Image 1 (cartoon, one colour):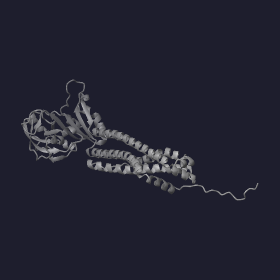
Image 2 (tube, one colour):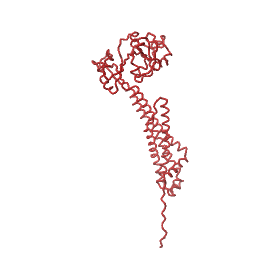
Image 3 (spheres, rainbow, N blue to C red):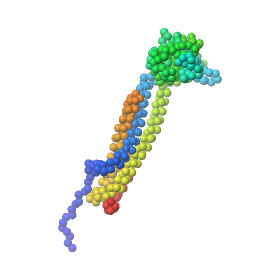
Image 4 (cartoon, helix red, strand yellow):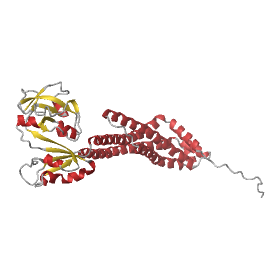
Length: 405
């Protein structure tokens, strides 16, 4: 036997560059444009939901922080509580003066609820009050609330003893008054009162928004008010506000401090921020469900693509493509679909956040975390959704693939 003296030829190793992988993957998606677009749309909706929820939450909280900064978190509200006695508790005479003796306190105002009804004229039947309450107030109320006037002016030392009234924002709306010029007089109790001002909303004292506010002098003259105070609003230096709060009850009513209720008005706004976070988590969950549906859609499309492209897979394997080359091609197609959907979703989410924040007058805030979550979710979903179809394509026998094509 003679052995061939011809040397064996070394076959070149099959290789596929990153550019080649991208070209092959993109060409596979381009041949199925509608199916690819619909698959990417599912990811777009999910990512847009996540980015939009995070963006709107951040924008709303930024506006809330701005509101808190402008109003201050150092406003305390002092009211009479129930205590241990069966009769209704009241604040002691001179309580406001005692509060002013607390060193960190720099501003105090008081209001008292007055029995009576408010009407546009004296011909309206009793009972149709539109939920408007009469309050007597000192002259410092607007300043202590960091409030402002929508129209007209607040009570002052010249008119507070006369039949003049300032309306809260909600009270004016319920009475159909937008400007002090719209209606000159209101029938309050059994007297005509001149409207001198309409306040803008007071976020830290919602009860006053639904109120008709008169001076203590007018309350004494026309309603027989005896000078009793229902609520004291206290401003203290921010760094000492909790210390002031801890001694407030004993200062106001040393004999029965348990009958004094002290609250911080800004706690309501902070509670609203917590509620916003709860809704954010809820909508994030809905966005995650949308992403899951989008991932399943991509996986379904890739499985169908593997079945439809068996001939292509068999031919490529026959001319030297390895299992790795086939698998990486289909994973790349899945990643491209998911990333396209993710990028579109981020853009849509940012647009939605911008439009809604503008309509609400909020700061526009797009957290970086929202963008990172969008990109990361797209890559993760693309990888997971494409893994099984890629493994199925890579393990397909070339002869079976060509025979079944």
